[in-house]
Length: 143
Image 1 (cartoon, rainbow, N blue to C red):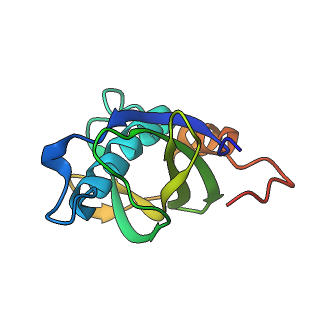
Image 2 (cartoon, rainbow, N blue to C red):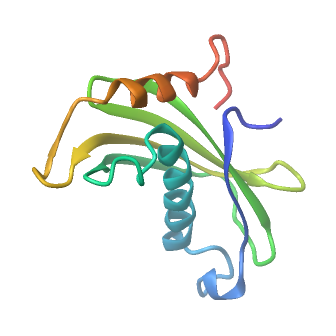
Image 3 (cartoon, one colour):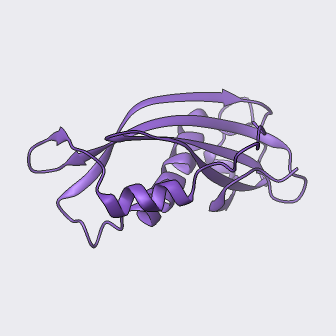
């Protein structure tokens, strides 16, 4: 079953990404999820259009569902779960590109961040609209 949302990352597990036990090291899961976040958040508020604003992750909850071995082709799909006053909650799912096996998922809460003031701010109207357009479809309970 294909995960909900939009495709935000496609990659391969290289040997140098694996630990002594032969599977993807957690630091590389996080790096892949971070790249997916940049894709998702860039679609919500393009960084080149808002260079003084950014995002600050305040919570990440990762579930590792299946060992990920060298050579595995992976795809991450992402969906917005909740739009708050200054925050977004979104889900990334990493699945096998060829077999759709769920390898890991991360639920992230991030806040809109003023890079000059170093503090959170309310989501801008355009960002709120873009995030709302990426919300999980009503009735979609896949997780």
